[in-house]
Image 1 (tube, each protein chain N blue to C red):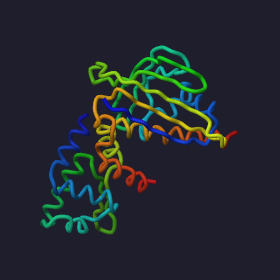
Image 2: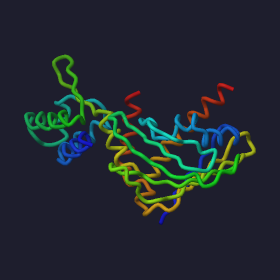
Image 3: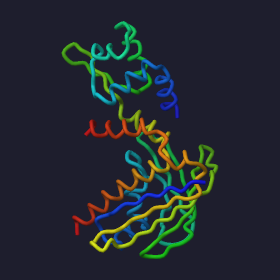
Image 4: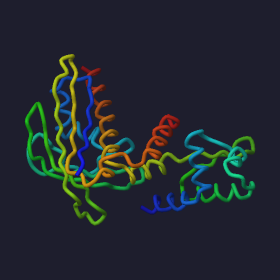
Amino acid sequence: MTDLVISRNFPADPATVFAFVTQEKHLTDWFSPEGMTVADHQLDLTKTGAWRATMMNADGQKYKVSGEVTDVSPPDSVEFTWGWHDEQDERGGNSIVRIEVKSDNKGGTEFRLVHTGLVDQESADNHNVGWSSSFVKLERMAK
Amino acid sequence: MTQITQAFAALSDPTRFAIVERLLTEGEKSAGDLQSTAEISAPAISRHLKVLRNAGVIHQRTAAQKRFYRVSPEAIQGISAWTMSHREFWESSMNRLHAALMKETTRK
């Protein structure tokens, strides 16, 4: 089991960041990698209960993920379970995502995302550096 | 899935892989420029380019009687998404969250 930790500093106050992280109308703007859109979704992370999102790329390929919001402590943290679905809509291994926000005392927000219970290092880490760095280059060229 | 399968099949050849790698790092190139990627004949290069084009991995453009080739962003995006790790998934999403927050704070 490997933990994945991502820390960021955002130039907005914690209450705003928390709203963007938990409210459906904001989540659909960012909750998928570049080049993808959120198609079908039930993404209210402001309260405990089931959530799901289907992401789609330009080719129409779909990636579905779902889970359950297990804890919401506004305006500090939210925790939810995470599992990808395969083509037969079978849900795979369950992992846990916890997001914490707190003030950086400079008007911004310290953001921390911890994804635990991932099956192995490869699943947590970047195992395709070559392609993704090429991808970034390509994006720059495309602009 | 078929598009990705075709892309991987086309890229399974070392020469074609090298061509795509070169186009990714150096941008658009003519068929003539690409010939130096591997020590092979012009007809062989055009055969490889045709395979890549049929698989949707590269695009072709004609200008001043020369043919130019560049990598298809959609094809790379497809491969990138297919091989994406959780870290890449979150990093890329976080970039978008950052952009959304920037938009929000400038609006205020």
